[in-house]
Length: 149
Image (cartoon, rainbow, N blue to C red; front, side, top):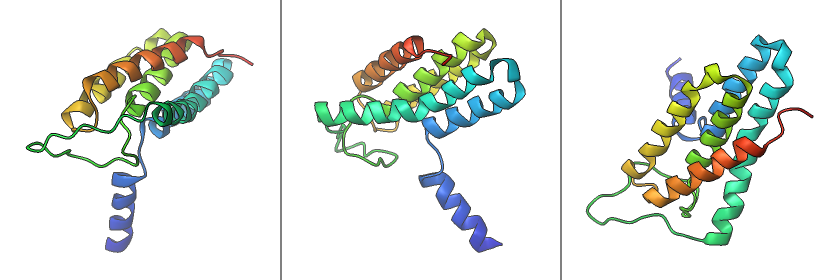
């Protein structure tokens, strides 16, 4: 049991979480609970991974390195050395904005997106402007995505 516990804990702390995965899981749950708006919730679920792909493309174009403060090392790791824009901010705001469009009762998702985004500079992973750009791009994406096919 201990080995399985440690393996699962390691997965959850390293690869088993991201704003895209977490947002998609919430939207998938809503799709199961709200059959009348299932299509819109499934689009919200797909938006997280789409936002991550978009973010990666922008990172490759901009090539901004992550911040370095010699006396304050980052409190976490990242899969890339590129900083602009924040993938956490972009994907969480994209999905939260789209979810809010489907049902304003999900406004709490916007609060979660804000809290998650504000933590990125604190952790030493991003400049504040990375987070602001990610949030604005995410909101724009969440507003323009069609919520029906």
